[in-house]
Image (cartoon, rainbow, N blue to C red; front, side, top):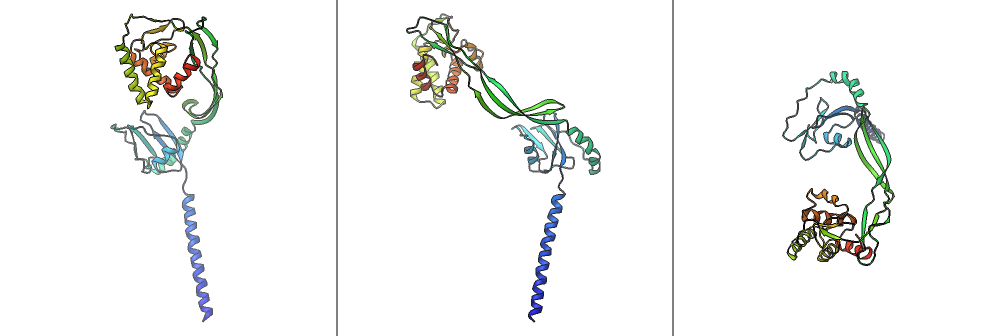
Length: 312
């Protein structure tokens, strides 16, 4: 009796192992049948590319090819759906009716696979590393109290150098995409420092009274708070621009060419905030606060730099 029981248990073990082996074999066969396929991606600007992928979900295919939808774009099929038999993904602007893609049979697709592959080879990518110049800034040093020499360059400016690595995509040897992957500073730029003696004049004959200056300073104070700066920063800003221009939007330095309330050099820099920079105090203040934020972080640091160096 014991011998029969032992034989039965051994038989069950063999059957269990066989079932597991069959399951593993089936999974391997299924995995082995997943082959890369060509998928056409049509953009909302009518540009088309062909990509080779083993993915089926639309969102995964787009992600693998570094394609992101803008807020006003939609995609067919939907992001969480699989591509259809046409193997085509269409990106359109919201509200636009996409051109309907004709369904093709599997046989037709197989017949065209060679032509599609040849079209795909027109798109190539390469990683390149180049050196680029970093432009230097021109800084004015006001020596109105003491020095007699004016408009003198006391430090020549020198451009810096940075090394940048890009991923560049070409189609038919024409660059169609360039993505910055990394960069590092090889040589820091050296600021050009010009020693000047301020001679402020008003081109328009505008009489600046306490009322006008107060309006300018109130506008600047409101913007300072939007930057998250403190009351001390506002006081430092008032002191800084008192020294630079007396808060005169028409202040012009005849030695250096600096202009306006923040004494931008050259004054045309302020055009980035508006073409009316020569007359509009708000445009000048907008640019001046942006400059302080990017270069020094806060007006207090800029004012301390001015007290130490005589310029900012």
